[in-house]
Image 1 (cartoon, rainbow, N blue to C red):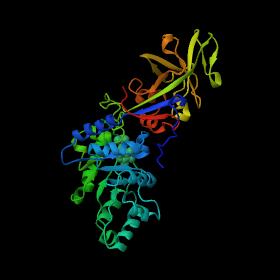
Image 2: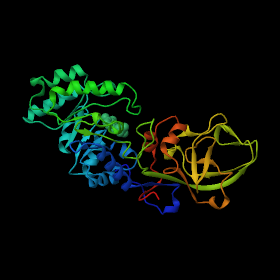
Image 3: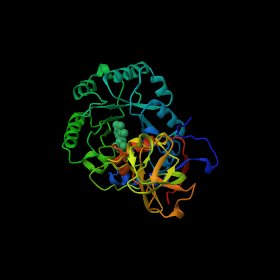
Amino acid sequence: MSTSQTLSFPSPLYGGRLTVDLQAIASNWRFLNGKTRAETECAVAIKGDAYGTGQEKVAPALFEAGCRTFFAAVPTEAIQLRKILPGAVIYALDGLFPGTHEHYLAHDIRPVLGCLEELEEWTVVCKAAGRSFDAAVHVDTGIHRLGLSAAEFTSAMTDKDLLGPFRPSLIMSHLACGSAPDNPMNRRQLDQFREITAPFADVPRSLANSAGVLMGPDYHFDLVRPGISVYGGQAIETEPNPMAPVARVEARIMIVRDVPEGDTIGYGATQIARRPLRNAVVAAGYADGMLRRASSTDDRPGGFGMIGGYRAPILGRISMDMITLDVTDVPEHLLKRGAFVEMLGPHVAASDLAAYAETIDYEYLTSLGRRFERVYGPLT
Ligand SMILES: *Cc1c(COP(=O)(O)O)cnc(C)c1O
């Protein structure tokens, strides 16, 4: 079962609507593909249910746009993806889980081997079969998450007894500071990756995530693996985002009411009305991925929604199922019961909301809940 599957009810019964624009996703991918040389393959990171946008619909759209290589994270995601895309190359970034190689082989999933034990487990399988099975080898250049250390990598890759018939289909590493291109760590990782992989120039190499693609050809090598930029997010924090938004969340107004000056709004009474307010309560909350950390208090503003071009700041705490918005300055005719307020999308950038919630737009996208009606279509 795809995680993006929702029950189908008549539209007015949903508290909110999530619209995903598959054309925008495809065109973002084409834009990134166009940034690389013709010899460089543009793959995609599709982990986290396509960053919350629903891989069941997104994967075929990207395949149709010309993308042929997909990076899932955990094996369950990769196997689900195989059912959707029988003809694609599929990697599992989280590598080889212990004792599970048969599943990878049965579904033609390539693990990104992230430590010596995983590499050894895979080469045993290759030796037993007398042939190589495709897998990537991940070498760590400083992020210290997954990946063989440089020393382990070099000794393993030159150890014929260890490798047996195994030949990696890809050598990869991952940038720690791509969101800040001026950080000297980027250059250091690039130089180290070049140096470590130089003796294995016959194996395709990959270093770049979205930020790496945008940082230019030095980082591209043979294959790039953008994720967030394909989904419209902001890969580089210090520059304007060149990508088109791909998702919009709208929440339904349940009631509009007056709050007298001096009264408080929401759980914990964290916000007091400094003047007589008009507020709208909408049917979306943290159970729908509207992160509670974007709540508003007297000391610290929270996120906002947009309705008919008017900004509606969040008042008080975000609850599980509802958010209270300040609509004092919004014309009454826009505030009908049942009307939608945009809570994320073309007018409410996930990266702006993320600043209020002290997080990144990746978390907003991947948190989008399962209670909204999901619609695939243009955002306009
Ligand atoms: C998530 C991930 C990517 C994609 O990163 P973005 O910043 O979303 O472009 C690429 N490579 C690895 C190893 C990842 O974990």
